[in-house]
Image (cartoon, rainbow, N blue to C red; front, side, top):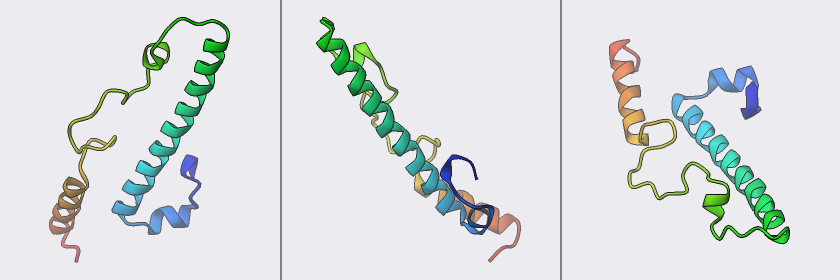
Length: 95
């Protein structure tokens, strides 16, 4: 299924927390690949005589500035996700 590479069965049998962490892992993988491409571009730029001293100014990537809170790319902390899951279970009488 999609870019995660899961089968439909794996997706539908996974817990919400597993899906959350799989998506986080996917975003981490994309960030690493984006950094590889940026580094290759930076090296080519510098070899070609580029004068910019900062790789972030040459090719800005979201997240270059430090993030001061524990929120994920999905907008919630793992604790908030667990609390939401419990709220949903309670609302639908799921044990």
